[in-house]
Each structure stands twice: as structure tokens, then as C-alpha cells.
Image (cartoon, rainbow, N blue to C red; front, side):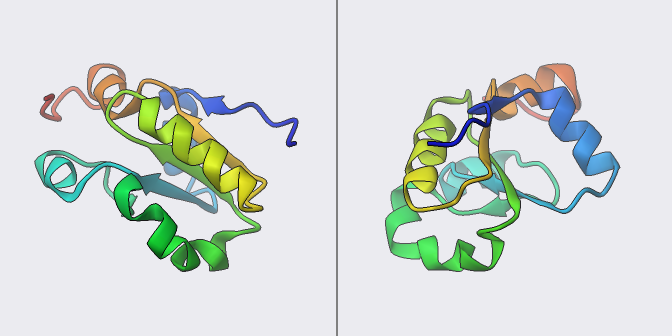
Length: 111
């Protein structure tokens, strides 16, 4: 099992985005949620489709992946599942896009 922390906070993710760090921001919410509000540059791959579409993430397997959802519950489950599939460098964004909308970009709608 990885010794990496399971979670990363919103501010650290924002720093990575601003620095144009080489990582994948993965949104595991459903498309309707993504259409309501999303973080620019995030790849949408709903948790409900993850098992069927995990091959799409293979090119990112050695890279850092940060998964986010609405509040952090689904992304934590996806993070654990991806680690079990051999993706070693995966973290969940604590607080999800809801926390992002209160701490990072207050112009984003909340739901």
C-alpha cells in the first residue's frame, strides 16, 4: 500500500494548477453536476463509469492524479479503487468542489 496521503487540500491543488504542474485533475461526479459547475482543465470521468472506462487513465498511470467530487466522499472511494488498480500516485481533493467554491473561487455556483 502507498505511503502517500489519501487526501490533498484545495489550496494545494490550486497551487499545482497555477504552477502548471504535470498532473491530472479528475472529476468523478456525474455529467449533470459537471455541467452545473466544474474546475477548468478537469477531466470528467464519473464514478459510475470508472470501471468501464479506467483504460482511459492508463496513459496517466505514472503521473499524479487528483480526484475530486462534490464534497470528497466519492473521490475518496475512487482514489482507493484506483490505487488498488495500480495507480500509485492518486489523491482525493478534500472537501471537493464545494470547498473549492468557498475557499478558492467564490464566483462558482454551489449546489
